[in-house]
Length: 309
Image (cartoon, rainbow, N blue to C red; front, side, top):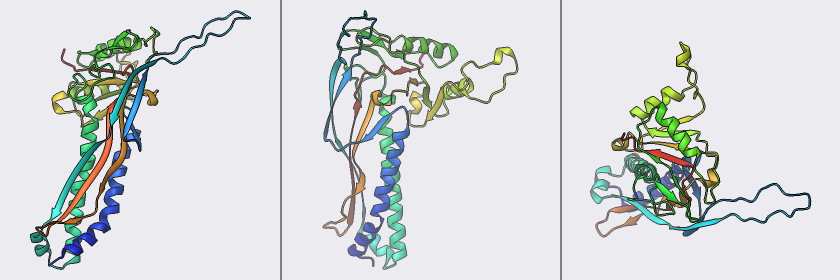
């Protein structure tokens, strides 16, 4: 039969492919505009939200420019969390494989592929908790301890709202544009937020209407069919918004990526540890990863609706 040593050697041979695959799958999210995914080597990360910056004004010929500073807001601290998975090759598995190198490789490759898919899906589901729980604080709260989409209070005491309840249609979209463009910073200045991305549940009624409204290349058949929004907004459908939340829709201004509050910092990508032989002669393979995640800035560039009305 196959031995523990042969399983360990074969496992070491596929470690690189798992580690590389897991890293590549997660790093794909760096290019997704509605999240802020970055690599980090800090166990604890501290963020300070920004309140606003004013001071530019007309000055007389000999006037002295007024000194101003970027207003500091809330302090946000997030820590790395440990995420794990594991599988094992039992002594019975080894007996079934005999001493066939091919059977060993096939068995371990299947285990690797399943584990890799789970790691990728797990990260996607975790990061989409920002949207699936955007209207409560079950998982995450904004720096002012309010849900992602709600009525927020800057540290200065000024408030703004980035939440609605209307189901997606053209009128609801128009209302949302007005609402988000009117958001003011902590010193009362309009932020000039101009959403360029809408995020919806894959294959949902909201997704169908959004594509009908924003898709380019549609030829109007009459004056009334002209789409004034054609090409102005990118529609992103994601299957990771839960089916139960299929009425949810979100607007994002992605022109300010460094300000995006939906942050995940990858410290250790999911990877194989050294395989271990247990007292029952099974070879155990652990998979561990570390990342932190949180809403690290005020979400003034995000607007969301739960689509209930």
